[in-house]
Length: 216
Image 1 (tube, rainbow, N blue to C red):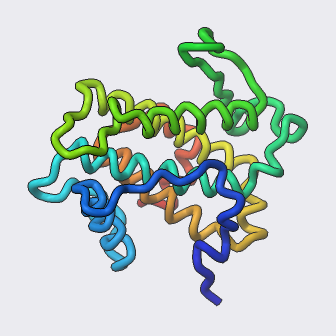
Image 2 (cartoon, helix red, strand yellow):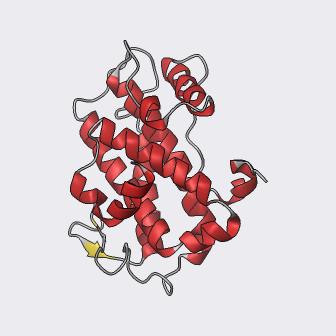
C-alpha cells in the first residue's frame, strides 16, 4: 500500500521551521516549476537541469532551501534515536568522522556528538538561508558574488546528514516504511549537486557504493 510523505513523517517532528517562498515572487514560481517536474514523474536527472532562460543563482537558491526543508524533516524523524550515547561522534561508519568548525565558538575542527553537530549544522544553515544579504527575497536585489561558494558549503554539510542517517539510523527509516521517500530525496539531492558541480567528489565517498546502485 502506498503511503504519502506526510503520513510517513510527522510534521511535529520537523527539526526546524520550514523556510517558505513568498507567493508572487520569481523564486516562488521556480519552486512551483521544480515541484511540478518532480510530481509529474519526470526523470530526476532531467528535473535538476537549469531550465532555459532561468538564472543559475535563483535555481540553486530554490533547491538549497527545499533540500534544507526535506533533510531537516528526515533528520527530525530520527533525532530522538540519535543521542550522545548512541552517536558519541558525528560519523559515517568507522572510516569517516566529521568535525565541526565555524567562525564563532569552534574556530578549529572539533569532534562532537552527532546530535550536537546536527544542531549546529541546522542552526548555521538556517542563519544563511534567512540572511537577506545571502538569499535575497526581494526582486532586483542581487545575490552576493560568493553565493555559489556558500551554497557549496551548505550542500556539503547537508550531505553529511544523509551519510549519518543512512549508515547509523536507516533501520529506523525501514521500520517506518520511509526508505523509498528518503531514497528519492537522496537521488534528487545527488543529481542536483553533481549536475551543477556543487559538491566535491571526495565528499561523496562514504555513500559511493550505495549511490552507484541507486543512481546508475
